[in-house]
Picture 1 (cartoon, rainbow, N blue to C red):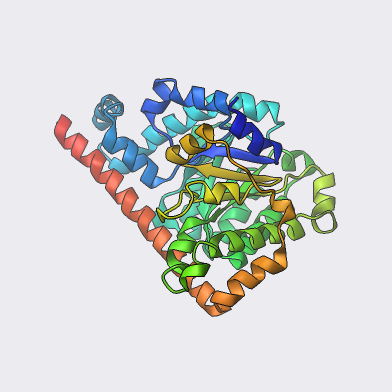
Picture 2: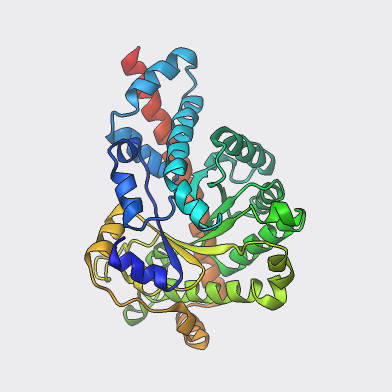
Length: 357
């Protein structure tokens, strides 16, 4: 176990890896990262696009799948289901040792369904059944139309990772959808279902920094996240969530996503060291993982955050409307970027099919 990850774990946070590829699984690299302290994995279309374009480990399967079915999306689902299933197996010991509270692997539904509730539900059920692992999480975008998807999947006992959350209001809606889903389950079923709410960090600063003064730059995203953590504490407090928790329900942990800095002037671990605390997850790309494991960093405990201070940071530089415009735009951009990555990976498969034929 890496001592830096141990320091983070001691403050109550799990470190997940925001990356997956067949090469990483086959070479044993993923296993060694798990032994160093990685306790979950997140994936998205951009991650799979990168894996498909940079590795030839998929070529053999693409060739044999092409003979069975030439449809690029079906081929991609076959490839990704195998990778996610293999990663679930590697993380099963952690899942078992934490009584099903950690050790998850996330796979995203087709981003083109982000605003289609029915298709999202169908695809979520299909992926869950196909992977058939207790520690798989289905990623659902935190859009208005995504909220009934979250509630429905949770009510079926399917683990959900709510992705692309930028605003506190959408985060609160995602938490409510999770709780509504739990309320449709028996205590026995409730114990087995889990969820995380993926709250995006660095992209907030990238947008906010363009419109605020220089001395306030690099602060809005952290303050926004810390205030979302206060929302989390209120929603899942003993007063609000105590009865469900008594029946065996799990809290929906906040997961910090997009935690690599985009501004080269910021400390490389800014979005890790400032956001460590109980009942949270930070999913990090490989470069951030390398930074964590090779540096000695002082981590701040979220529990000691001064809410008034962080409210002031945002209010001093952005009106509520300005912040809402930024978060709305980031959600639309996030869906568009995942759609483009999904198209890109399908084209990558089509090119490989042509190459093999």
